[in-house]
Length: 258
Image (cartoon, rainbow, N blue to C red):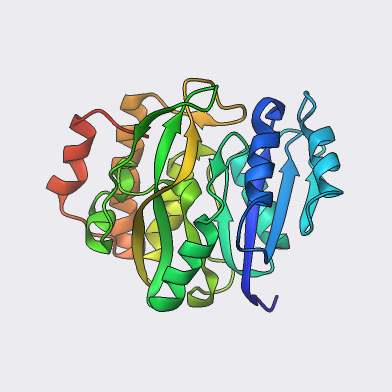
């Protein structure tokens, strides 16, 4: 597939997310950057999620909706979305969250000014069910800090990240796992071979917290640490990912913001 320059493909897996899905879609519709391809994949929801998607597909230009015949999980939905993604740029968003209207425009501007950057995230705010801000992130902005702490989920917020596919080999963005956030970490580690990472020092993403996220498989804290260490070891040999062990393990000893 020939990538379309200056198009952002938004891959949006949806599962029993009807309660907050409207707010998410409205935040996408308000984007000041208008060249969007929104790929929403309903993962066999049992609530009104698909009805909401159908309603917005008549309102939002560029929104295409798909429905799985059974529930597969995040990894399969992301991979299905990537098969449809035509944009040079891609972002993987959560249907429970929201994004500021200027976010995509600012991130794309950064990527154009920094052609060696393969992925750009933003600061984010945790919000409760009513949309009230509870906490704001202080993620590192420089690629080296993000690199060293990638597996701790404390250096980048996955759903805020826009990726420049122009710098990547075909089919590199493939998800093997459903476990969050490790399914992103497995992919992001590979990206470091092709460019730099960065975070804008501005809060542009709103992450819903304090509720169970439908369809997301989470591990216990112990399992996350064990899985991260295993991924760190395999990534050393497979992708030459070599953060210092001290900077890698230290954040696990502190409470996480994500």
